[in-house]
Image 1 (cartoon, rainbow, N blue to C red):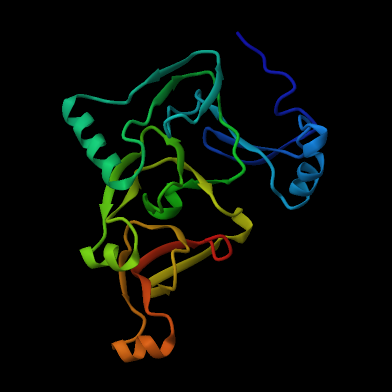
Image 2 (image 1 turned 90 degrees about the vertical axis):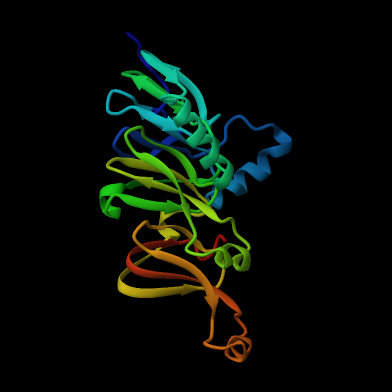
Length: 253
């Protein structure tokens, strides 16, 4: 039996969001600063630069984390590698190598409480039911998810997309039913959500942080010809075709 005091019930802590096993908290002020850093901390808080943490309730779901994300845990919490055999290990190693994510993501089970490392990035909680059970992430966004969600490497539709766009050939795809926790460069209030119904979205730059797994992602010239692309001044654009959703971070990328 355990009891946690002066944490989420602290008047300096604000609960930003709750979904599934995850609760996102934010520290309104940094009370641990030294006098030499006080001015920086004050103006950082005024500009919404604050530390945030994710609190995980394992009685609601088993949880898979990005490696190194756990800070502390209380009660009945058990950690495993999540590896289910040699073939699974090989598959995760390959996926981690091509996507740039950690090859082994630890899984936590039990009915206790786990708290993740603080971050200045913005925590976004997504229910995959709102994404038809499939989402693809930009590099470095994954933080945690329900352990029943499946991870896979999603390859670009063609090699030229990766070469021309200056990005990797693979992205991390998440499939299934459950809640996903992302570390975003900008808050949810600034994310632009675009829903496509058998249509197309063209973006100049790497502003998309997540998109539906049902969309076809390529990199193409902005115009129908080299002259047209040169005239527009845009050159190459990221193109998403089909039916699904795209999350854009237009002011942070």
